[in-house]
Image (cartoon, rainbow, N blue to C red; front, side, top):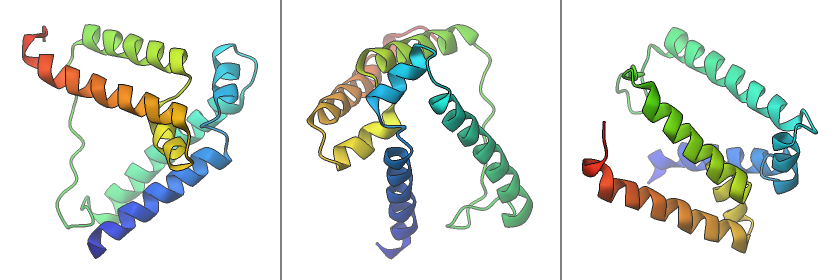
Length: 139
């Protein structure tokens, strides 16, 4: 149980950051989709830069090992742009309809938002449905 504590701490800190930066705010997300504010684009660019630097530093200083000591591998995605385009469209439509990305859903559920709880139930149902139909979908 103690070995999971760093993950719990990191997830809690991430959720806190999402809420305090207003990345979980429906109004901020709608401002982004209507191109009325740079706020969310700035958050996304900061996240991309942080991710790239974080992976680079982990490769350089940690020796590509996870907390458990297993080697870290970043798999190369297979080429198939149509499923990425379709997946991106479905993700974007869902994000635009409910005004939430999957990350803030958990933060908002933690804050007691009933609407986010409904969105989480829908996201989990969609994930289950994909798993059930995966073998029948084209590659």
